[in-house]
Length: 447
Ligand code: SF4
Image 1 (cartoon, protein in one colour):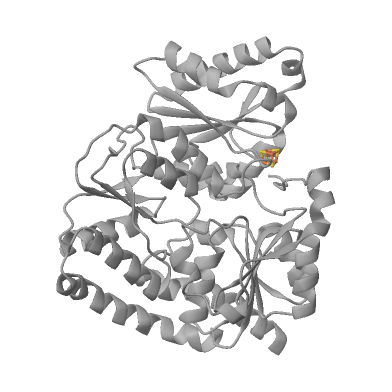
Image 2 (image 1 turned 180 degrees about the vertical axis):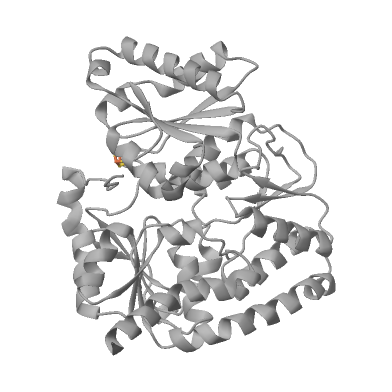
């Protein structure tokens, strides 16, 4: 086993035979346009998405005192290096313990190698306070019991570092589910407390989070904390006084686990665009009994400024036809923003999985009859893209280049997770992310 700082790869999750056989079973569910609801169908088939290891790229920035040690193959090492790009020039806070052939000879050897590697790492990097062992999909990794390894290593490095584990395997996770897995690993360590607090759940860019904190303080919210925290050892408490406000739409299991610990979930749209962000903040304020005037004093100028920033991008986006392929789990809130605030026409909205409870506020805002496709059968979806010829397709990196070569403008969905796009202040920048590829394609067509 060797520790690789990082390198490039093909992060596709391969379909199982069963999934391939189920391709024929794409089915329609739920009500159609006549009831004023979105039209929801489900597909099972080959998926084309990044695996959960990808989330290490934003999680390591969020918690600089944590280290993410992927236990995987060279492919995994290539993936996180490529996804992390520039981080190769910095002192990395992630790496890959690559399982070599000699590890396959015996699991005992592999465990010994892992222990030795972790000891070396901790000696070289005394600032590490939390070490995540991140599982991957090669069969030799699946055979390793990383939960036991984490327990053993926590014991042998007691008082120095705590070792947790989770899976980022492409068989089990899409790329944003990696964050969910990491949060679920942290959750048992959160202390119990019934103190009244707003808990913002989901990684935000530090600057965006600071801004939200300042705005909530101006509204008069007493205590606002966030998960994941900026220091991995300073976990927020959770209990009956906790009201959870999800900043990211891909944290279903985390939300339910927090509710299980006594917290209440605030139902709101997600903070993308002016409308979603204002409704998200207002819902939090209402949950704490803040007067409507105090909320309006803070929100009204933000809304006005956000709409002004949006206007020039709306001119470029209005009337354009949009197709979102399932990838980041952010597709439904983005579709709502692009349709309602930017005037785009939704051809199809794909989503890896649909949590109807966490999406209820968003689904209610979509235009009636919006076609939503849960799951993926990539070939069928690509056929629909080709026959519909939308103006813009939001998709993963692996599909973007072929579609661009066919003359279809694309937006990489992964960029939306890496960019600070939450909040009224960011609405103009968010719209610009979608307007830019259309502008570029327009220039190419003109030249
Ligand atoms: S975890 Fe699986 S899908 Fe992800 S990079 Fe490693 S081998 Fe590929």
